[in-house]
Image 1 (tube, rainbow over the protein chains, first blue to last red):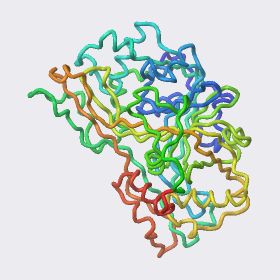
Image 2: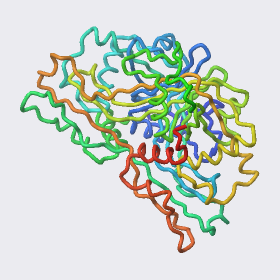
Image 3: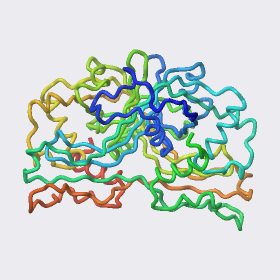
Image 4: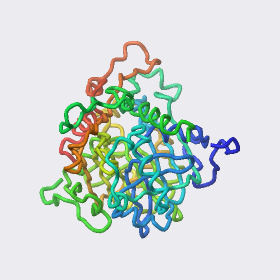
Length: 241
Length: 241
């Protein structure tokens, strides 16, 4: 990002954090960090007045978000001309058991990003996106793969959305009761929720002698997915964007 | 559910699984199982043509989905008269490293549920929902809590959506390459992604002698969140609905 980039996303009635506004942030670094440590997003879009909420793999490139799918999918057919969309990422961090129903809650870190989603049609932008789609998760991996065919490239639609507005919302305080309630004889706790890697499962059909590349060394059982993804992102986008 | 309930949700152009339709299902038992083993959903709704994708805790009661928030939130102000919405739950199960960029993928199990969301205004339905909101996660817990105040009940808006259409989509095949590609000298693997509980953290401000209730015995470190949630759901809704 050039030095002249603003450090926050602009705020208006679309992205202003309304509920519990003390949990909100428009800081670019915060928004980007939460995006770059995730692979799964949910995208909201509208077709004939009907909202759809679709899960998808995604990644960030500067102030652009990319995701993809088959050219045949419902969302992509409707986004080709440019459609308003909202891409949301949520890190689910805990369930919170308080002393009243009202203060039962969850810790989480989420980002909502708003913009106009459109189909990537420029061949160079599409080729770069198809590379980054893989390398953002597994640094330098595309250089080791069977090359994509023209038919595969045609069949893969890539969507891009310039982030016009964004907000992060973070709750990280665990149990938080009304002051008088702490004296009550009621059990309260925070239950952490962790998204981690399991033991990687090599494909059973590899020719003999194929070794796991060193570039996957970060993908080890027990590590937090968000840490693995943040490291992979930083390897592919060393400037942070 | 009465014996006369259909075993599948109706299918039309809104909920038909278009992309990779072999991964789709409209079976009620499948849809409900995926919903009941989750606590976090993303809800898409529309305000003035702008789609929003909001993360929220939710639960199922029969063919109704409930979620909540402060009465002040943007979504809830607009849902009070009844608005089309889509609630999506995604279980993220793996990242898949294939031998071509095209076949890189993820294993997942998701549900998209469509209907008209409206504010719960009936006091009895709202009272029951505020109880279930907690007990669905922590069986019988509300009976042990400080009672809700009138102000708290007023400040908590509850949204209900009858599921009019729904579809499940499941990818669970790990590495799946084009047949000739298996012979290539390329490393391929499936990296499992697991969402588990961490070590529960009792609140530091409890009076002495407060013990953890047996009803929380399922909440132990290392268990899959989805298993814990499915068990808690079954304890609160023993008939499965």
